[in-house]
Amino acid sequence: MLDVSVNAQILNLMSGLKQRYDLAYLFITHDVATTKYICDWIAVMYLGEIVEKGPFEEVTRAPGHPYTIALLSAIPMPDPKLKLKPMATEGEIPSSINPPGGCRFHPRCPYREAVCEKEHPTLTKYSDNHYVACFRADEMRREAGKFLEYLQLRKG
Image 1 (tube, rainbow, N blue to C red):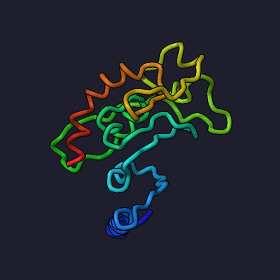
Image 2: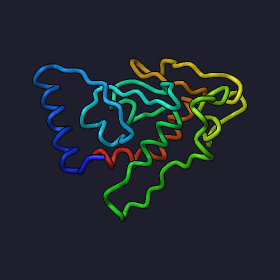
Image 3: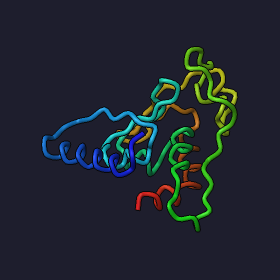
Image 4: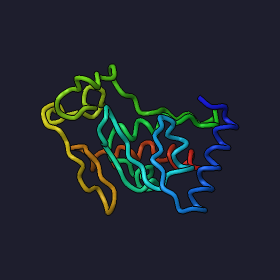
């Protein structure tokens, strides 16, 4: 883990090099908040599989997978007056060596249905360049609305 000021310096350097030399990065992180500084496109992975991908702005403004919503809603807000709760996930993270059948996120998903336990969702076109692997992606867009204010506020 880097010191916050060193982290910011490295992100600024990467961003400057990206613009100056028209570079592309494969930026792997658990710190979703930093992705907005370096990424034009984003792919969200859960247990080794991409569950959502697309342009950064689109994925963060209209997430279609519950795991993406949970990640984005868990980013801390710097204003303690805002009483926004992150989306709750359930249970323990399953083994990546022996992942569950069906959707890999279903054991932790508060929106799971029977189909999620039995069938494996494939990445499906959600909009122009936005793909989501969730049987309930359209419903998740509406569900994300509960967190949309939070997501917009954190972009500041």
